Image (cartoon, rainbow, N blue to C red; front, top):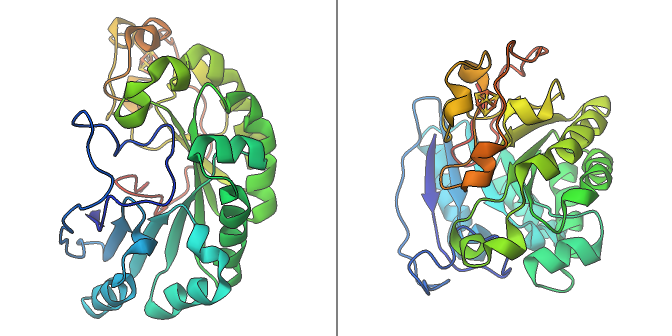
Length: 287
Ligand code: SF4
């Protein structure tokens, strides 16, 4: 999938932000926009930083549609969509899909992660407005040491908002999380039971759940789909694992503890019917 990073500027300061600190003290602002074209499947995604801060976002969306895009996704923290008129303007310009990051089911949990008081209220309102104006909504959550116990409650909120899909990604030690890994990056064996429990709740509500960085051997037969099988890091336990072909492994750059948590499976977990196609996010198109 083609995607364009419009800016690194953002009005959140997430504790796990992959964009921050890559080069020691990399700036949050000033990134040069990169151009991308619509892919062969007629899709394009706009990302950041926070793309809704970019003044010509709507013009770029219109241009993409004029260039033949059938699906246009914006990956956002959702805060600006709290203004219904802005959400409507995205839909009117031709946005079809929106991916909004949501890190907790309460202001305390979400705002701790974004480090912006009031962001939870805006993000939840933005997600509701996205659905109200007819956008296909994926909610996306990064699992950290501070929110993994809250995943079942978050699953209930995801269902209540009416998301079409939910993406759960384990925090990996890159960007801001890499600078404070002992505060942010969880041990996978600790979060996996909560990820599995949350996936069951979402599944019962009809929300398709995708995971990255949470291996199949840790979540058993939970109803969540590995979004990018074959794309992660694998360990010695994977060599003879029956699930190797359908497992996403751990996020590249994860630490040795994640690898030591892997367990060879003698049979691949039973899977239900995979959603035929889902435009799930930046580089995360499930087909
Ligand atoms: S052992 Fe490796 S391939 Fe098998 S489920 Fe675990 S991480 Fe995936």
